[in-house]
Amino acid sequence: MLKGRKALVTGASSGLGAHFAQVLAAQGAEVTLGARRLAELQEVCAQITNDGGQARAVRLDVTDANSVAEVCAEPFDIVVNNAGISAAGPAIGYSEADWDRTMDINLKGAFLVSQAAAQKMKDNGGGSIINIASILGLRVAGAVAAYATSKAALVQLTKATALEWARYGIRVNALCPGYIETPLNTDFFATDAGQALIKRIPQRRLGRLQDLDGPLLLLASDAGAYMTGSEIAVDGGHLVSSL
Ligand code: NAD
Image 1 (cartoon, helix red, strand yellow):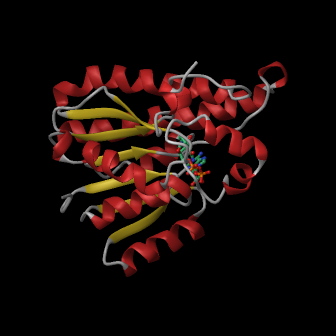
Image 2: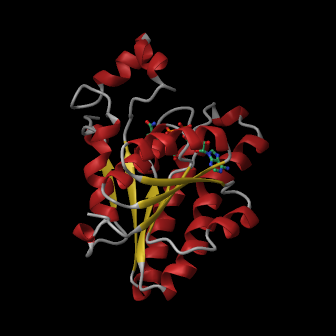
């Protein structure tokens, strides 16, 4: 499906990003995995190569324009803006430093990477940019004000850049996952609070990484050729839960 396409996945050293890199590579894409921790990235690359895919690791800090420019000096057909942090805490006591860090990684980082990649895509006949937002960019919950705000802004950035870049053949879409089970949150979802949260999801279960594969490939491939500026929620119905 993606043979001959070059893809960049940011924040690919763990969780969703590592999975996205594997999924794109399994469809024939040559995948560049970017994150700050090179050793972890190399482990993911080794797995992909063992499975017969093509992957390489590059050091990337999405908040650093020089680092972004270095990685995006080569053209990509597909970019997955996945790097993100989910710092939680009540808004009343949230520190300025934490606010800035959340916005820098989740929003400015996606902008810097999108812009640098789009400048190459423009000369190359186009491409697909997939911004990994969240259902918290579309609705709110307690103690995630900075995160939810950064993801809402990312959804709006998706639409604004989709509008401006359609003329260059660049599609920009947002994938908005609900709660996906990863090694980082398994312990929380085993607690009473975690179990209560799962009961509020209409499908009564957490998302699995594999639940994101179809939507990711739809947006990355020509199957989604007429899609730009859209937001796709993958959340077991969480956004339509009863009020
Ligand atoms: P994770 O912490 O496992 O992965 C985040 C990745 O981003 C890591 O590889 C980290 O090294 C990287 N990263 C952080 N700062 C970076 C920077 N400055 N430069 C480059 N890379 C950086 O978390 P995850 O759960 O896999 O989340 C991945 C994305 O999916 C995030 O954007 C997150 O907001 C989004 N998301 C996750 C869920 C979920 O349930 N896990 C739900 C909705 C959205």
